Length: 394
Image (tube, rainbow, N blue to C red):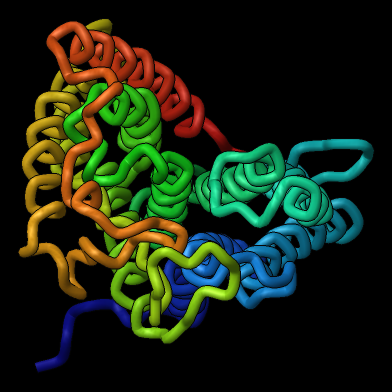
């Protein structure tokens, strides 16, 4: 019996193939931006490990090259987009671009270009700083903050670059772009966690400062992606990407042998130091998704306080108890890396498995209340940022 379904015309078949192609592949500029984002975060964590294990023996380390390769990829892809859109762009491409100094490019390209310039500017500044003030292993220093600002700008530029066409795409065609957006958001989350790393050791997680800093920083991004993304469970997927990247570096870096080269060497390492075990942000991110999805797209006065309350109510007991495990002998292995994140200048002692609460603010009800207020302000900013990103079309 012959099928009653109509045979598609060649024009319809070509349109279907074109639609499948649009959902199955990213333009090379977006691919280069994603590769650059990945190279930056891998190089950053590698560079921190290099400082902690070997010391800063030269500017031309492989870790530094990975970081600046990411900046170059982002700058080149953003620059090409500006030149192409300005001089050879289609009317649709020019209409979906932002004009700056006579050039046209998507908003994300301009943000990424600025980030690349900031990164490259920080390189000689960082080299001079170390020559003038010492070969330190500190994360927070003026040149590092310039570098961090550039790297985060590139990540945000990449987010906007995949977000705009995703927002313009018809329903059902935004999945690949939406997933790319959440992946870059996960990289941004890892960047933020890395900036806070010096105050996020398990030894710090029974004090007030860790929870105040976490409530100030993490809800803004999780609330933003939950509000901005057209995909479900956006905050949860962002936190999963963050967790996967952090675990990959935690498990891979210590596989490589290395030895300290700068005195004083108080802890003779024989492998690359590992990053910290990832924070358990997936659980509060899941709760944030549930609340945002139940609230819909409308702005509600209670939404930010609700997100703050659920974030603190879940994050605090999770990290409080997880830190007990991470400081115990059960975590001194390749899975948790509890004994693999110390730098060579540290003198071994019982302090490595104890909480650092002496002369630090304890976690009191008042401190928890301050943390809640910080989380509420962070979530409110994130919801506003997410609502703006949901409207980005250029």
